[in-house]
Structure formats: C-alpha cells, structure tokens
Amino acid sequence: MRTVLIRSYGGPDVLELAEQPMPKPGAGEVLIRTKAMGVSRPDILIRKGVYTWMPPMPASPGNELTGIVEAVGAGVDAIRPGQAVLLSARDMPVRGGCYTEFIAVPATAVYLLPDGVDFDQAVVLPTYLVAYAMLNDMGFRSGLRSVFVAGASGGVGGALVELAKARGLEVIGSAGSEEKAAQARALGADHVINYRTDPMIDRVMELTGGRGVDVAFDHIIGPTFTDYLHILADLGTLVFYNIHAPMPEKDVFREICALSTKSPALRCFNIHTYDKNPPERRRLTREVIALHASGKIKPRVGARLPMAQAAEAHRLLEDGAVLGKIVLHP
Image (tube, rainbow, N blue to C red; front, side):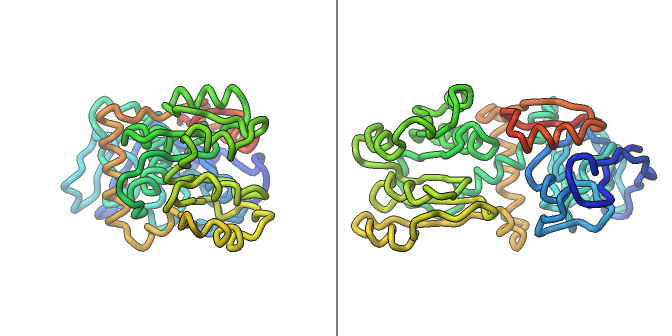
C-alpha cells in the first residue's frame, strides 16, 4: 500500500510517497480503507517538526481520514466490515498517520458515519469540532444574541459562522477580500466587514445599535487584538484560539481594566484540553456528526488532489490559496 511519509523536517518537498506493508488489524482494532484525507495546519507543523504532539519518525503527517472498514480484529463487535467511518488522530495514541491508503487503528478511535455519507465532506468534521466545542462547551451565559467571527471564510471561522447560524444567532464576520466576504455570506454570515478597508470597531457597534456582540472569536491575535475587547457587549467574552500567533501591541490587562464597567472576559481555547477528557471529546464529535447527518451543516471542500500531490496540497494551504478544506484521495 502507499503512504505519504516524512523522513526529515522541512518544506513540502520532504513529503514522500512510499510503499509500506499492508497493516493487519490486531485484537480490538479495525482496518480502514481510506476514501478521503483532510489536509490541516497540524500536518504542516508535523512536517516542519514543530508540533507539540509530534509522532515518531518517519511519520505520516495526516490527522484525519474517512473510509470503509475493511476488516476487524478479534473482540470487535460494535463495528463490522463495510461500515463508513471517520478517524481523527485526536483519538489516537499518537498524532499523524492518516496520509495512507489503509490504516489499522483501535476500534475505540473511530466514529460510525451514516449510510450514503459524502466522504469528502465528512473528513472536514474534525475542524467543525473545534468550532462546536468553543461555541457550545465554554460556559457562555444564557441568552446569547450575537457573535463576531474573525476570518469568517476560513476553516474554523467558517464552521463558527455555520454553527452560530444553526443556533439562530446574529453573525458578524470579517474578511480580507470581497471573494472571502462572499464565502462568509454564503455560509450564513449576516454582515461581513473588510478588515483591510473598514473601521472594524465602528462598524460592529453600528451594526449592533451600539450594544456590541456577546462573543468575539479571533484566530490571529496580532498587533490589533485588543480592538476586539471594544466590540463586546456588557458581560461579553473574547475568545482566541491560535496559540502560535504574534502578541498584541497594547497591554491586554490595561485594556480590560479600562473597559471594566462592561465586565469583559478573555478566554483562550485549545482543542487539546479534551486530550484529558476523551469521553467528552467523543460526545461532542458525535453531536457534530449528527448535525451533518441532519443537513444543518455542509462542510466545504475547496480542492481535491491525489495523495501523490500531498506536497502541492501543503503549498496551497500555506499560501491560503484555497477557500474550504483541501482533501486528498488515495
């Protein structure tokens, strides 16, 4: 069988298509024949050797796939050959391993998918898990009315837009081009602000009648991060979810104190928090799968490439050249 491997760290060219022995499912394992592989930011961090949860070398950098159960090992009763499944490396003992034609994994790591599932769309669901957990499992106060989503056309940002609209919330997003703004609107955003040309704080306050938003989600941080504190409603929360980002220019604590009459909150989110609570992560993942099965969310696929072009897929992702998930096919 074929697998994409890295034997040394570096740019996209270190991704190598290699022949590997066909795996066999051991006791408690299932063998999956891959249908679709997602390409995500952690894959790039693995390729560069800077991921906190690095797999041992040589490594396959993929972190999610969908496929069909080919065979099951001894003791596996709840899953049978022929069933469609989703695998996320978050449920594996080590990360990576998913750029491959076949993989043997613990049966407890896979999720059953509904009959007739679109494998390309389903492989995007681990991205939705990040957004779903932030929106539904962070203890926001009841009565949420509105949210702001920075990068509303991106992977997690777009998922936040879709999920917030599924909850009936007003969504204001930001984007850096008209093309990206159109994508965000297509996902359901009520208003999209071009952060390159529009005064973001003024526009948000204008759109909300001076109230502000209940929650703002940011994936960049960066020099102007503290601006988001100024668009919060009373008792609002600012959430950032990119721990590899540059820091803001202004002192965050001073800005919060200056806004103390609004009682703003600042929250950091990292999906790896659930590494310490796998049952909760699995519950949330099943809820995301159910939303997809019901048609309430429709994951976007921006590009489809053969697995042999994994290096090109990484280039496209790093360049931000594709709106929607990049999917590899075996």
